[in-house]
Image (cartoon, rainbow, N blue to C red; front, side):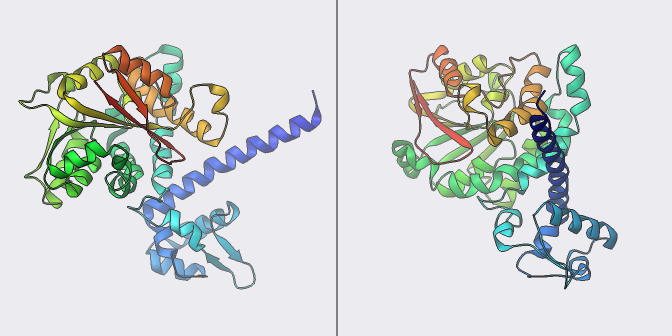
Length: 351
């Protein structure tokens, strides 16, 4: 063995351990509003942060110290002040924007909370079904996606398929499959007032939240949320657009679902799929995004599919696997859209 390689690996392992703890601290800062309390306020002493946040002093003190060590906050040892730089606040104290990353950290405890059960599944098979992530799971996914969906879907992403965009402007029918809490459904409904929308999801808790958001947005006349499996869903009219956002890789029966969606799409319609940005080959995913996505797959995406006897496609399914799936059920057109994103791929699929 080479001593330098041992030292290098030890340093890397401790960096990972430190990052795990820092992720937990960022989760706390997001959940309790600490980042918002510090945003735009410049250097603050401990008492300032406690007063602005309304939280317990000793906990806040230790959190501040940890965030300084993790380089999320800046510290002046002479003045003993803590500061959240504006560049960090841009990403951590910006809930509801397309540049907010706090939602990703919010998901970490939700995923790692099932780690013992996932480890058991390594031995016995099966997995952790979506419902077992509870309200925290629903909230984390909502927080991760809300800003992107509300600010980019209609104004940027959908413009890459102009015929679909124009159809919705004049008045079309849209099905948001795997709608979750309805962020995509409601964002599109707001952008296209002449169109009608259905959000479909099998999770009752997510649908309840989606219905509450629809009521808040006063869009109940054009938006309908349905808690049902797609195989059981029937409609008198087919759809001009079906969206499937960050959910195909989670499916228990991807072939069956895609077949059902094809049947719900009108002959000139488009299936718009949003999936994590990964390459088809492992060697092309050896980076921080790949590490994150494979971890999310083990602790959330893959395991929920395996829990119900599915194939466990996983977060890192990749474009080639998706193309093979959609063509196996009879779709003939498959296009990877040229939309700039560090983390996401977009697909236009049709008959």
